[in-house]
Length: 445
Ligand code: GLY
Ligand code: MN
Ligand code: MN
Image 1 (cartoon, protein in one colour):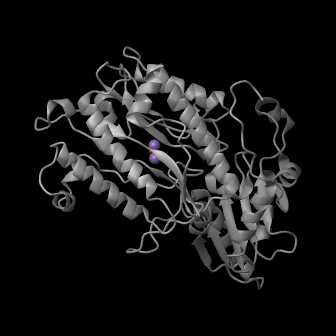
Image 2 (cartoon, protein in one colour):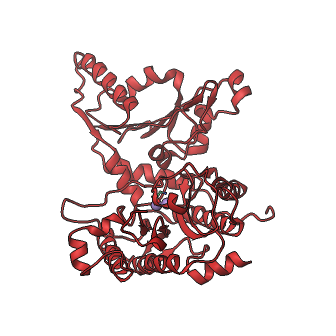
Image 3 (spheres, rainbow, N blue to C red):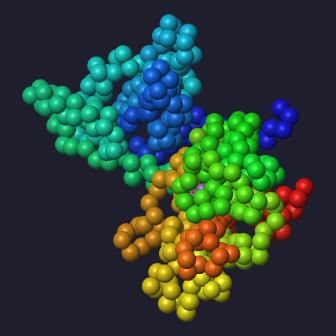
């Protein structure tokens, strides 16, 4: 192993990807077909592209990381139910951009039943879809809808030759997203690793913090650690908000100097093997909380710790959020930032001046991962083993005239990543401190 490199979990096996396709196929009627395009390269400027990021649903079902793929699932097809279209082999191009798997490589390395190169796509796709009556596709994909429209067109021509008509199309996304909501052991190991890298990066930023640095220099510490550990980079734009910038929920300018009397809020997570970590910590630039900072921080921390402890099978994110709202509101009243009765301030929503986001979201291949939050209008999704979520309460105090000076412009959020287990939960982000004394001790080193 390389020096300083954290031990890595194994990649997800070809067998697991195959199992996922089989599980999805089993939910479809015999006359159906799934059409699921992968992502393409996106131009950043002129001849330069953004780093390629595969579409998460496509990746979940194939493990394939090349651009311009297309997965077609055909229940009951004798020659094979899983077909992938992929980039053409092209030695001249591959000299510039590297090896392409080609059809044979995709079958060998990804275990699909059959693969074709994109040069053959129009012809082969027409044959594969002929006679299928229901198309399942991601309805938010213009490319998939265009393929379905073409198939409809072809099918109408085919109808004259006595084939069954294409009856219409349905959204495949809810079926895939329900599967993605429950993570396998192999997926949890990868998320755990993304979280571990993220935790190391946060510790590194805490140790580096001092007045006079700029926010982007802490961003550099974090992202150095991500890449050093073999992550592809950040799973989302790194937020380093010092002072009142911490109150801007999606602050990504990261260009202000760190002041010696302020806190800094860092929301940053690594992407490892396409899985996201998502950690927020808030700490004093100098390593020492002031009394007002500590008092507010403790309110958020107590709410966060209680919320994490509530994660278990059968609990709901709605209940956990309600608990957080209660605890934060009670804390705000105790500090004099709200007045009166806790329930009254919850009912009139005056707490929302200081806390306006929700407490949790799913975490996985996407940082705001897919999966439903409600079974229906009234019924929140109960937590089940294998779900992975964040717990991230915060308080954001505006710099308004009616706010006591000591609290103005303080923004605090504390975010951990948590797996639901059979008998409770497992916190994946414990390697970065959140208790006041632990943070002060780490930063004093
Ligand atoms: N970093 C985005 C979030 O915490 O939801
Ligand atoms: Mn976050
Ligand atoms: Mn989050």
